[in-house]
Length: 191
Image (cartoon, rainbow, N blue to C red):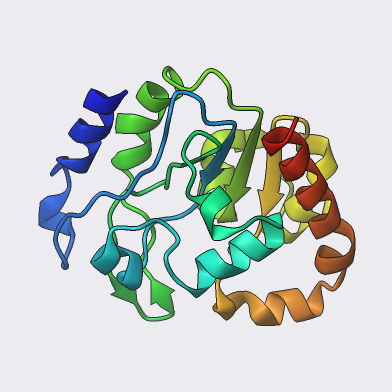
């Protein structure tokens, strides 16, 4: 797996499409138990090279009910974004993840992670890629009916502060979904 991670971190497949250059961000280990599949690194993560090293990451760790040390323990948590590099900014936030990354690297990574027991699919890009025709009509519905995707997948919206309006409109997420997420995460991480 070390060689594969080195190949990913050296990847330049879509360098001509990235206005801020390449800096693939990934974290994985053969013993990882939880996989987090999000969108793509943001501007701050691009600069630091540390996955989820921003307010979205802080929110995600709170949602999961785990510490920063637990989150960054790759023998517990693997982080595979749909796009490994920062795609740049569009009119209403970051651009979508580059489409080359997941098809190029995800299957290869999964071959080295036989112990994954729970995969968090964060946002529409991850959910569409992995669940295709099993998705509901909207991200909100897919998250609301998250139990239908268990035990393998747990559906989540993006934890960006930009989604505070969505969370305010969908209070059930905090009261019904997050307690179950935390329970599942703790079961997997602390058997």
